[in-house]
Image: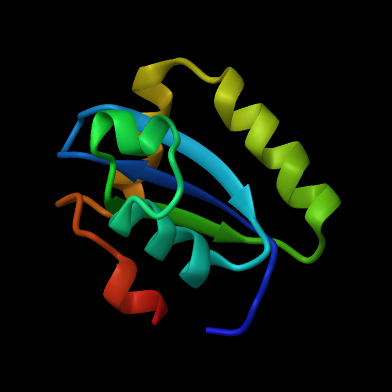
Length: 96
């Protein structure tokens, strides 16, 4: 997967704690979360599974979308994930 601005969601289990982030290098950033390479919210809560991502044309658009998603209520986020990843599979192998 080439580098692309994107919004992504990490979790620790289906319908568990959700983390929404934005990055220009999803493979690298997801790997950092998975291996706890960077001390963060995801490290504290053990959020190692990539369950959702969206690619965007530019970083401005990705950041705008991240802010929108962070403003959504939890149920809307869960429904969005389940519309594309019904079984909450870890998508890391899909992006590498």
